[in-house]
Length: 273
Image 1 (cartoon, one colour):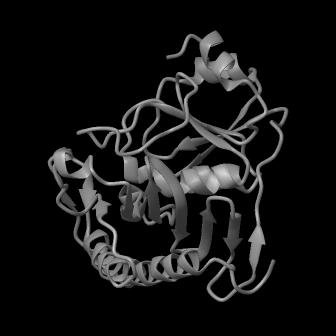
Image 2 (cartoon, helix red, strand yellow):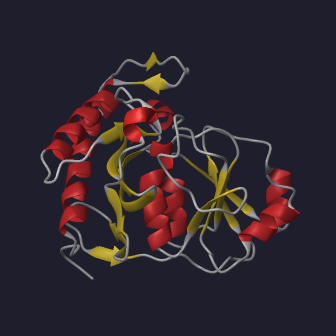
């Protein structure tokens, strides 16, 4: 498939992500200051500029749905629990990578419907790569703005397996991975939600995350990976769900490309959770 994506809302959200990416890159090319939030995570003017672009863009769509974003004040659970459809946004996922200037950061925009991610867009502003998916519409990649859309798909588990690993959040999980995948697995460090996209386009097999993430870190890329044929599972083997309660933190998880494998059994045999 080339040219238009063939899904009006997905095209609109993809274009919006590109506008947010332009706002990020305008700051990335300059000197910028880094502040730190209460949880010690970094914050830059680029996070806030992208938030402004995305909030305005989503508010201009019809119909207008609520927004949950990393860089906005969170509404109380008593209000959120009533929602059946809302936007879940990380305007700059991988701020640590942005500060390091290694290019491994993304814009994440997802639509959540009845606790499931049903539309997702992930933009890598530095390379211009855009990943987009909608439930029942497949997963797609556009190499640069205006380029042709190419369908992407996961692969069967490779031997040796390639593991997408966090660039800035390492963990003592090597024993678990060896138990699940064998001693000869290959590790490819990568920042932000690009790890999911690497699996979605068949260039990696597994991403195991031990430790905290937030719902906006995973939702957009989960839709891309699922529509490409993969899965995102908690360590009990259950698919990820959103807007589950007061906390916006995710459980620990594994993202996989080959959904034909019994990952629940592999997790159990490895002693997880």
